[in-house]
Image (cartoon, helix red, strand yellow):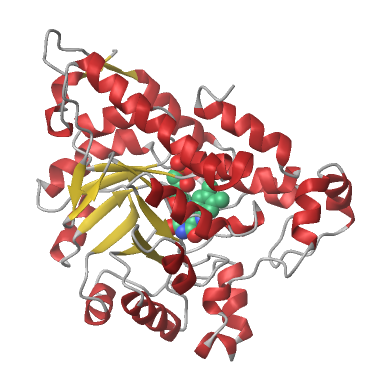
Length: 378
Ligand SMILES: Cc1cc2nc3c(=O)[nH]c(=O)nc-3n(C[C@H](O)[C@H](O)[C@H](O)COP(=O)(O)O)c2cc1C
């Protein structure tokens, strides 16, 4: 029975070869940050306020003029096509079917135009990695504009890839070429292996045209997550000149960075530690959130991700001032378990939990959630 997000993870673990499951599930170095994300969330308790009329519960929020049915969205997941064929479109459709936003990764396995076309009514944002040849980013931003993406999300926490030890132990490297090590794994998961054996193996198709086509080393740079390390806050001006829609930065934790972001004209911030996949010594996002919210002081919406597994986790972040929460791995586990329907089921589970938690707290609207609902158990 799929009663909790952990059930989707269990199903995904059974369905996927070990190296694929670990690619999604794993985190950096000792995997302490990923644990911290959840233990810190659990250490916060919620204080209900009673005898409030919650007959008309409304979990909707408005962001950049768009309605989200619930304050959650799907975080960008690179190389999702490894989990299932057609993953990017399936995730976009799952989000759209629930009235939720979807952020497509630069490292998607389907072209950004076709993902957009697969869920035209959906609220879709594009996540941007900037690699050493900035013309690639320039092209992607232009294409995102032409394809009517609703916002651009610059990820700032990957100047270099975190050390994901599980991937190394599993011999999993990009570009993906199954070797002897993965063979037994593949044989043990015939459904996945067969589905991947038919047709081309997933590639970084967003980079396979124009400048990138002419430059295989750029594709290699993305594979190795070799980013442009000369990118600074000043570079936002360059992005601004290319993109006039909402611009967000994703992956900051420091309140001083939040101030830089605002000073450089961003429209939103995503507090993130990349789901524990980058700096293992980083704090949990729920512990970093209040200082960022304080520094931002209501000037732009602050979002958060990393480790949110329960509706009550989401409610805690909203009570502490987040506008919305992005969900990464749970959507992928749902996708692995049962395709688009599975991803939608995982998101629906979290939004149902948000509704129940709000009712139990005596809050009928998202704006009713306040710091007074959060009880620090120390
Ligand atoms: C398999 C995987 C791939 C990811 N790829 C990207 C990516 O391409 N771009 C990006 O900005 N973040 C990427 N992330 C980070 C997520 O967007 C998000 O910050 C993180 O997964 C949230 O934590 P959660 O998985 O605990 O919900 C990835 C995360 C995972 C698990």
